[in-house]
Length: 449
Image (cartoon, rainbow, N blue to C red):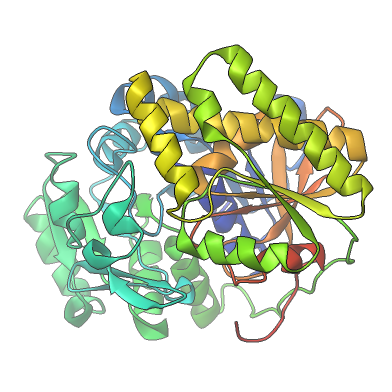
């Protein structure tokens, strides 16, 4: 039986978030970290939703053109009526890095469609779109994207425009149109804009009613709109429609798993949300270990030496009963200033440097887990998660326990020593202040947070 949905994620945290939405709605789901072998795919043949994670968000269109087609074609052959290109809920993208426009053009060659719905908002995650403009919540409130304290100053893809179609127009020449809140439930409006030749359809979404309407629009028009772009808001909307129409029953939220005494965490995020989480962790049994990111701008020997230093420090912290937490930054502080100065002196491409940070943190995590036999971990940071996960030799993830939407605890599968590892992948702006402790406690509901 074909799955209902397949998805290709432009980073690992967002890819896992899609799986979480579907799995916790009662649809068995799996996320692969690459095109699986036939044997591995057969282990998960019963899944109603199948995804592939990539690091496309941190690459240019030339990389996308080389790497995305085989993955999109593999997913298309599974026969799901919806193929979803998953993007960040804050629309992280630019013509030179993580281009959503380029990805849509590539995906249309693998899955031709009359038009591509673009649903970025996810109200459960405090991501809202009204009349074409995207808003995103933080611990300090909700901000229009071009005034967002993180996204407006993002080091790689700063958002100077909150109108998503205006932002997207710098990445593709495909004609587009907006399905605004006032027209969302009107099927005649959809047909009228399709008749104009629009190929990308940006969809407003603010609340449960508009989310259900968006899901209905996508699902009922899947024969013509079988390729979709957007955040995990796509799956939230589909689930609402499926439940509303009786296609799937409502399910009780899953619980957590057992608490463990220690976990290992690494973080490459510069978000103020993550900085608050690091502060909480330091006060609650975690050993914070700063990674000197300047090491990645030098030679391989410098980077290897820094990785060895942090691995030894993490092992010592674990031996003392603490949970080691290796981080390359704590908000926009001295660590970031020192790194940026070193980066400027080196002349290294910032995207390459960020990739090297993620890879180094992944190797530190790998070595620490091997040395301590700790079986639960966290990677914090969207780009960091992708590059870090590659170092662990893991091939598949399934969601096992919720936390905040988009940052569940998962179980990982692979041929190496980390098979069965419990791991959470968290975007920099995701999670409560006590998130690291929540994962140590085993996830599960904690009421409103």
